[in-house]
Length: 151
Image 1 (cartoon, helix red, strand yellow):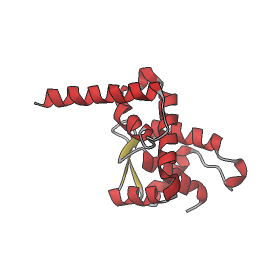
Image 2 (cartoon, one colour; image 1 turned 30 degrees about the vertical axis):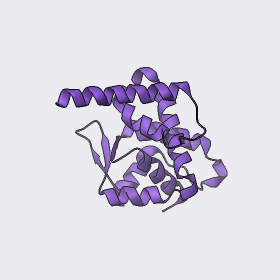
Image 3 (tube, helix red, strand yellow; image 1 turned 45 degrees about the vertical axis):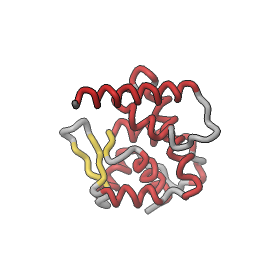
Image 4 (cartoon, one colour; image 1 turned 60 degrees about the vertical axis):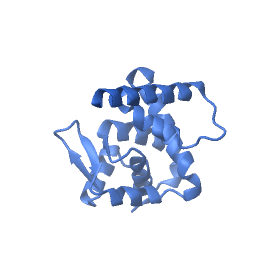
Protein backbone atom coordinates (compact mmCIF):
# COMPACT_ATOMS: atom_id res chain seq x y z
CA UNK A 1 0.00 0.00 0.00
CA UNK A 2 1.09 3.55 -0.67
CA UNK A 3 1.67 5.90 2.27
CA UNK A 4 -1.47 7.74 1.24
CA UNK A 5 -3.54 4.54 1.31
CA UNK A 6 -2.07 3.59 4.69
CA UNK A 7 -2.93 6.99 6.15
CA UNK A 8 -6.44 6.70 4.72
CA UNK A 9 -6.83 3.28 6.37
CA UNK A 10 -5.64 4.74 9.70
CA UNK A 11 -8.29 7.47 9.51
CA UNK A 12 -11.01 4.99 8.56
CA UNK A 13 -10.02 2.61 11.36
CA UNK A 14 -10.63 5.36 13.93
CA UNK A 15 -14.22 5.76 12.72
CA UNK A 16 -15.27 2.32 13.89
CA UNK A 17 -16.65 -0.85 12.38
CA UNK A 18 -18.80 1.10 9.93
CA UNK A 19 -19.01 4.69 8.77
CA UNK A 20 -20.62 6.75 6.04
CA UNK A 21 -18.86 7.92 2.91
CA UNK A 22 -19.77 11.45 4.01
CA UNK A 23 -17.92 11.00 7.32
CA UNK A 24 -14.73 9.50 5.86
CA UNK A 25 -14.74 12.16 3.14
CA UNK A 26 -15.02 14.92 5.75
CA UNK A 27 -12.15 13.44 7.80
CA UNK A 28 -9.98 12.65 4.78
CA UNK A 29 -10.38 16.10 3.21
CA UNK A 30 -9.25 17.67 6.48
CA UNK A 31 -6.34 15.24 6.81
CA UNK A 32 -5.18 15.98 3.27
CA UNK A 33 -4.99 19.69 4.13
CA UNK A 34 -2.88 18.81 7.18
CA UNK A 35 -0.46 16.53 5.36
CA UNK A 36 2.54 18.16 3.79
CA UNK A 37 2.16 17.95 0.00
CA UNK A 38 5.68 16.54 -0.32
CA UNK A 39 4.97 13.62 2.02
CA UNK A 40 2.53 11.94 -0.38
CA UNK A 41 3.59 11.14 -3.90
CA UNK A 42 0.03 11.15 -5.24
CA UNK A 43 -3.27 12.54 -4.07
CA UNK A 44 -6.39 10.50 -4.60
CA UNK A 45 -9.96 11.48 -3.90
CA UNK A 46 -11.88 9.80 -1.11
CA UNK A 47 -13.92 7.91 -3.71
CA UNK A 48 -10.78 6.61 -5.43
CA UNK A 49 -9.33 5.43 -2.13
CA UNK A 50 -12.61 3.77 -1.09
CA UNK A 51 -12.71 1.91 -4.41
CA UNK A 52 -9.09 0.82 -3.92
CA UNK A 53 -9.93 -0.46 -0.41
CA UNK A 54 -12.96 -2.33 -1.79
CA UNK A 55 -10.82 -3.87 -4.55
CA UNK A 56 -8.20 -4.89 -1.96
CA UNK A 57 -11.04 -6.49 0.06
CA UNK A 58 -10.57 -4.26 3.10
CA UNK A 59 -13.91 -2.45 2.95
CA UNK A 60 -17.43 -3.04 1.67
CA UNK A 61 -19.84 -0.30 0.61
CA UNK A 62 -23.58 -0.72 1.12
CA UNK A 63 -25.23 1.62 -1.38
CA UNK A 64 -28.66 0.79 0.08
CA UNK A 65 -27.76 2.14 3.51
CA UNK A 66 -26.66 5.77 3.06
CA UNK A 67 -23.46 4.69 1.31
CA UNK A 68 -22.29 3.03 4.50
CA UNK A 69 -18.78 1.57 4.51
CA UNK A 70 -17.77 -1.30 6.75
CA UNK A 71 -14.69 -3.38 7.28
CA UNK A 72 -14.92 -6.84 5.71
CA UNK A 73 -13.73 -8.25 9.05
CA UNK A 74 -12.86 -6.73 12.42
CA UNK A 75 -9.31 -8.07 12.08
CA UNK A 76 -8.84 -5.85 8.99
CA UNK A 77 -9.82 -2.81 11.06
CA UNK A 78 -7.42 -3.92 13.81
CA UNK A 79 -4.56 -4.21 11.31
CA UNK A 80 -5.40 -0.76 9.91
CA UNK A 81 -5.35 0.61 13.47
CA UNK A 82 -1.97 -1.05 14.06
CA UNK A 83 -0.51 1.07 11.26
CA UNK A 84 -0.64 3.99 13.71
CA UNK A 85 2.54 4.17 15.76
CA UNK A 86 1.80 3.07 19.30
CA UNK A 87 3.14 6.28 20.82
CA UNK A 88 0.89 8.32 18.47
CA UNK A 89 -2.21 6.14 18.78
CA UNK A 90 -4.15 8.16 21.37
CA UNK A 91 -3.25 11.57 19.97
CA UNK A 92 -4.16 10.46 16.43
CA UNK A 93 -7.54 9.15 17.60
CA UNK A 94 -8.18 12.36 19.50
CA UNK A 95 -7.28 14.47 16.45
CA UNK A 96 -9.80 12.49 14.36
CA UNK A 97 -12.41 13.13 17.07
CA UNK A 98 -11.62 16.85 17.09
CA UNK A 99 -11.95 17.06 13.31
CA UNK A 100 -15.26 15.18 13.42
CA UNK A 101 -16.56 17.39 16.25
CA UNK A 102 -15.50 20.64 14.56
CA UNK A 103 -16.86 19.65 11.15
CA UNK A 104 -20.23 18.45 12.47
CA UNK A 105 -20.80 21.20 14.98
CA UNK A 106 -22.85 20.83 18.14
CA UNK A 107 -26.20 20.93 16.32
CA UNK A 108 -25.40 17.95 14.03
CA UNK A 109 -23.53 15.82 16.54
CA UNK A 110 -26.36 13.68 17.96
CA UNK A 111 -26.18 10.71 15.51
CA UNK A 112 -22.41 10.38 16.05
CA UNK A 113 -22.27 11.46 19.70
CA UNK A 114 -20.89 8.21 21.14
CA UNK A 115 -18.26 7.75 18.41
CA UNK A 116 -17.00 11.34 18.60
CA UNK A 117 -16.96 11.36 22.40
CA UNK A 118 -15.05 8.08 22.46
CA UNK A 119 -12.38 9.50 20.14
CA UNK A 120 -12.13 12.74 22.11
CA UNK A 121 -11.61 10.72 25.29
CA UNK A 122 -8.56 8.97 23.79
CA UNK A 123 -6.35 11.36 25.76
CA UNK A 124 -7.61 12.12 29.23
CA UNK A 125 -4.61 13.48 31.06
CA UNK A 126 -3.78 17.14 30.73
CA UNK A 127 -6.87 17.92 28.67
CA UNK A 128 -9.35 20.34 30.17
CA UNK A 129 -12.02 21.58 27.83
CA UNK A 130 -15.49 22.49 29.01
CA UNK A 131 -17.01 21.68 25.61
CA UNK A 132 -15.66 18.14 25.73
CA UNK A 133 -16.84 17.77 29.33
CA UNK A 134 -20.33 18.78 28.16
CA UNK A 135 -20.12 16.20 25.38
CA UNK A 136 -19.27 13.49 27.91
CA UNK A 137 -22.25 14.53 30.01
CA UNK A 138 -24.51 14.53 26.96
CA UNK A 139 -23.27 11.06 25.94
CA UNK A 140 -23.79 9.75 29.49
CA UNK A 141 -27.33 11.13 29.55
CA UNK A 142 -28.09 9.59 26.16
CA UNK A 143 -26.71 6.23 27.33
CA UNK A 144 -28.81 6.47 30.48
CA UNK A 145 -31.93 7.27 28.45
CA UNK A 146 -31.29 4.39 26.06
CA UNK A 147 -30.73 2.01 28.97
CA UNK A 148 -33.89 3.21 30.72
CA UNK A 149 -35.87 2.70 27.52
CA UNK A 150 -34.55 -0.85 27.13
CA UNK A 151 -35.80 -1.90 30.57
